[in-house]
Length: 292
Ligand code: G1P
Image (cartoon, rainbow, N blue to C red; front, side, top):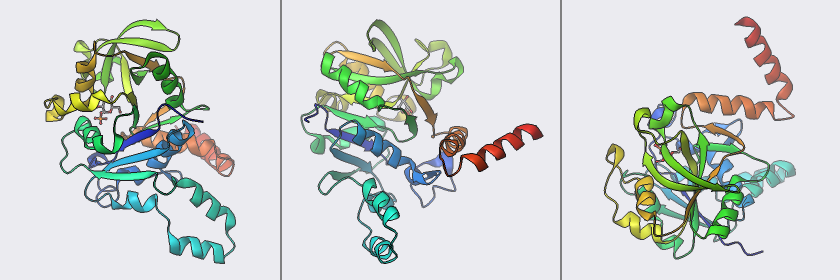
């Protein structure tokens, strides 16, 4: 089957300062939720949505991500020799195939918009997805697949949005919604990290984008915005009017693993969904509830 969106960009160059000291020498994208690194969830989601080309925008100190998606010859040989075929199979399924992965380097931390722009030559002239691994989303059918459906119907840019508490708008890009048709809401405008009083709604962009190629040209001309960084939200705002732009509402579980509390919540909830861990973790959760 041929998919209209075959390439996904994973910006993974961020310093992860919120998780220091854990992230001093380990990329934050490799911090595990139970026993899988955060980035693995995003890659698996993309693959399940039909993505075939995986572009990582990395930076200094992120080499372990490349190793994670590579063959580990010694490890695989050792598992084979020990007859651990299940573990071996599991490992092999984690990685995209040969030639399906590319790494580009964002040499300076100039923002999410700049990170996406750094991937322009690898992405080429096709529509592409962007996934931020911080946002861990659990859905029966990947939300990215529903967003690609909307892109195929409308031909334009698509972002995923979720309602956030009014007090948290300054952590996200916030859209101003227009008319809804089916699962797609027209986007009228958007702003990066507004104070609650300036937010046009409480619908936050939550780390999944389907973008058309012209966004790269717009990014090239986007000046630094909020936080002194080149913002993807600003480039998207500038694209309004020249092409269709819709938001898809999230209808699945989302964990903001960019925050410590979201990270801990994801760990507990995912552990509770695992057959091998449920009983013990449930007992722990119950006993903690009794104590408080
Ligand atoms: C980025 C985007 C923001 C979006 C958020 C989702 O911000 O700039 O628009 O709402 O991701 O997690 P960051 O979290 O990188 O500061």
